[in-house]
Image (cartoon, one colour):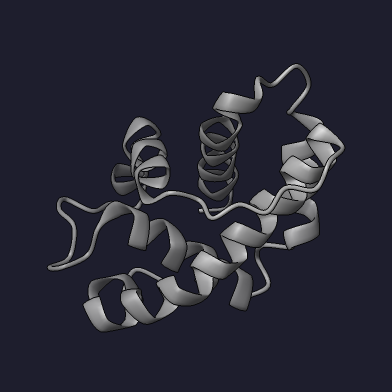
Length: 125
């Protein structure tokens, strides 16, 4: 994984797939948590904030980000890579998120679920 994370073009290509996977997991999780249909496009700053607050770069052993790569791109790329390698099962991630969403305020749900995703990813790395 670390070799792939050194290539900017590889990260950005994987990030496209990871973006779709993350939006799917968030939409399903929030739909189940709030018991009403939710379709969400996770905002970049939310992923960036969760990346920084959980020190994901440090956990990956990165001293600095690759050129032209933002933290949110890295979160999306890692998600895609782990999914392609069979290390992330979207249904298990959704179950994890839903099991931790009791009493979650709707206006903070996106940030809380992003934090949960980063913690889940960190537990796999």
